[in-house]
Length: 386
Image (cartoon, rainbow, N blue to C red; front, side):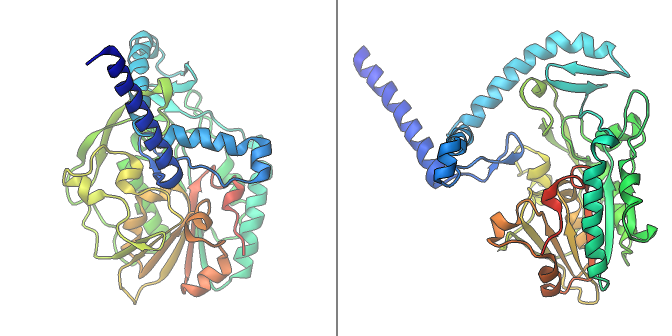
């Protein structure tokens, strides 16, 4: 084959790949970027305003980076290569910096754990007060419902060097008009506790943290049955780098462990479609592929429902974010029907705005759980609306 022919074949393959990537981006976009543990970017609807302010063009760039074939393979290979170099260079420094925060490129590290910066209460009071006012209005408007609030402390709530805690949870709870026995907290008082209950590379709690959270929630909600217990020892499913590990921080990885549970039979829908939530059984059977928090427990969805058929039990609405993904199936075992709604995605996936009052009436809800970490109680996306 001549050099000219070889070049023509090479160029043709590139054009085919680019064409396939463009077609996938426009017509068959994937939903999840599994490597970066998030929803994949998609092209925004073309509008005059979007074209003029450049947001449409930005969405095309972001979508192509996520959707084109082999894009994630390239990202992973690049990050692992650069991470290997960074790991070799920085390992001596990190090993000597025990008990101190270290800035590792653009990442904060404490004792080999990737950490988020500690928040200050002064920067959060206005938004916490707005969220408390919003919740209180709905508490008063729906006296027929039993409301519960569960706050998950994490690395942003405690300074690991000094042990000083940010009293954001106390500030919020002091302003909520609920009895104390309706308020729960996943408390983290220092690095020793944090490292026992959270991943090194991901912002979520690990298998022991989620078990502890589930047990606390079962008690808070007054579950009639004893909490489910693991039916075996923790199983190592592989190695992963979680949501905190991006770019140079990919030098950090860790084993992914999970507990097996004997869940009761239940019917499940995800965004209105029958199916399973997460792939716990597949992973524990060795068929799940590369593990991650979302792949194992379930990705964020607009609505997930669980029905056990136990008509003698209550129906509960859980309004939360990704932290509750790990405990939804466990909690569902204690109720007749469990409805989990993530207000960030409900309208996009369900095709209509979420109306709290209409939803609880339509689904015969008697209990409502508001659950999340500090970001849940700060973000406007989680305000209750009708």
